[in-house]
Length: 138
Image (cartoon, rainbow, N blue to C red; front, side, top):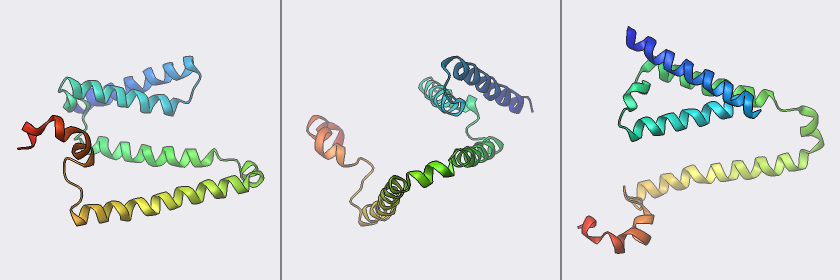
């Protein structure tokens, strides 16, 4: 039970640090929280202590998923309908580009995966690493 409180205290402490940084830099707290989370995760992984963050805890995964949904909702709630109406042409163009890129990316990646073109060591390996790392590929 103490482990749960330790993980919760760690993440709440990081949230407070993020709020202080965001206040002094005068930028969005959500942006700073994401950056702090990435940095802390990288540092913990570098030292091999990723389990300290509780990444395998089910309750923490639930909170993270709920937070992502809430963050997406809040980002959508900040949109101003008047600005969207005034810049309708730009909104439509950017929306269509995003939709087309996303609609082509998923099927293309599935086709690449199913046909066996992609390997665990991907195309970068064949272009750049193979000449240098021949001993590794044997």
